Length: 191
Image (cartoon, rainbow, N blue to C red; front, side, top):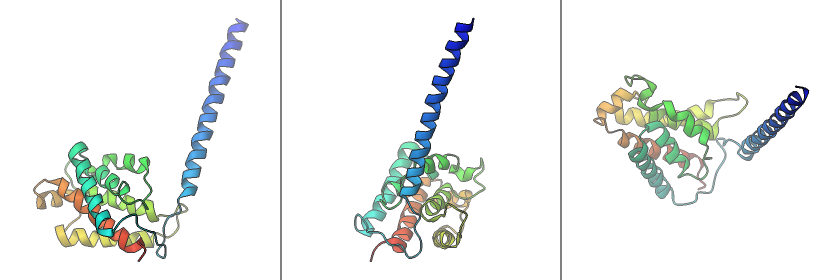
């Protein structure tokens, strides 16, 4: 009986040690990732990997292709942008966080368009501060996106945009990726 307890305890401590090492490794990787990227501010500039027009077209195309293959306006918009603009850090957590935002995150589409919301996630991901600092800059960029939605659709609500596009969300996904890419490139692209 004592021997069984010793084996069980050793097994427990071996499992606990392995779990702790895994957690420490995951925390170290997460900390390194967070440290590797510093959010961009209004005065920051980045060298673009291609011509602005080509990057914008790539983001719109990728987002639309993802939508054709997977659906989910929010995830496809976010992924299309992250996969096209190399100065926007690609992060699986952003992709996962957008998982419930399609369809206005409601059964009736009564909330913001998922592509609009995911675009805001990208803007926040790129410019947001980790310490609850000022959100003014992120809001300034988001307002530019809002103005594009409002100018085209007269709304940011899912149901209104679906009505405008006759239910073809792929159009909205491509436009959202295009608009956000234009906004980000105009703001941060080296001139």
